[in-house]
Length: 112
Length: 344
Image 1 (cartoon, each protein chain N blue to C red):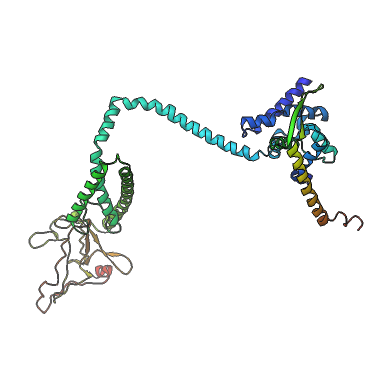
Image 2 (cartoon, one colour; image 1 turned 135 degrees about the horizontal axis):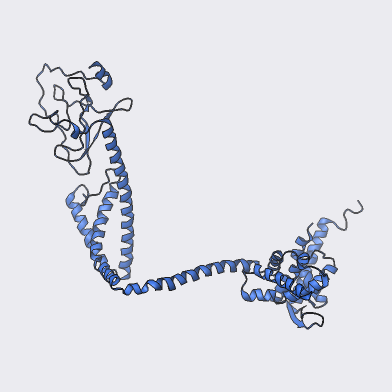
């Protein structure tokens, strides 16, 4: 199944989760998502999502001068972002449970 | 090396930005704010050509729009900008092009003609009233002869028609003199609209009527020579009058219908006139035989006035005195004109 399509619905949650651990700049977030296993995540999607979450008031941002290259704009969760993450996480867990039951990861097929 | 990379990044960025045309300047700026830096990071860390790493700039921009939730804004803005451009063009036309002819309004000749137009308004009011009645009557009569007359009959009466025209003209003038009031202006606009509609309907019915006349005349010219081509004096009344129709009667004074008449040589007698002896224009229609052919020597011929309201002599009635018993021998009268001709 197309991971990009699955990702579309949960990219907000993934980005919020990444930023909960540690503030990050655009490409940093992309890299951490990929390292976590989301190989196909598109650069533009992450960049656009960050801008949208920021505009939606879920993130704060600050610029950090960089020695080696251009200044980096860091994003981090603010209070609203944290609340959103908690709500999204609950929704996701419920959803994942339902799908697990439906698709049958635990009961299903490897042994069969 | 750095220059080449920078230039390539700029080109990529420019093409992404171009794709975001629909966004407002501030939205676009905000979205692209640190994209240059972001692209630099990507390039530096992934070590490669931007297009190979990120795909074509158009697709990158589309993805950016979608994930930033600005797709709808982008589309709406494009629409708005198109509308704005149209509006600006229109405003420009009004402001500049119309302003160019504005001085003409003060040109003496234009002023004169505007004054003239204003002075001609009463004439228009009169015309409006008269034309309203004429066209209304003409439209009412569509299907009959539908040809408007200068003074139309209303309910078959010329006096009533005259009254109607007079009333309409008075009403139109009365209304015209009050158009500086809002309600009168509205009523006036409505009246003009109705008149325009009536004129249109009359014109279309006129063209239909003209077509009907033309085809009737064509059919007549094709089948028989016109009465005016006849050698003068070939057929006439005892007092030297012109014969425009024939009304056969039997010995008991009963009018006969569908009688075929032939001359001494067995040739069908043909009369086809387009006006009566008094000069009233008529349309002559021939009887149609079993195979659909017109029979020009069937009498009496049916003649109708070309214009509604014209009177035609109705021909002699059954009051014609019965003949003496022991009737005269008439020429052979056949049902089929050609058979009769062959016999003759």
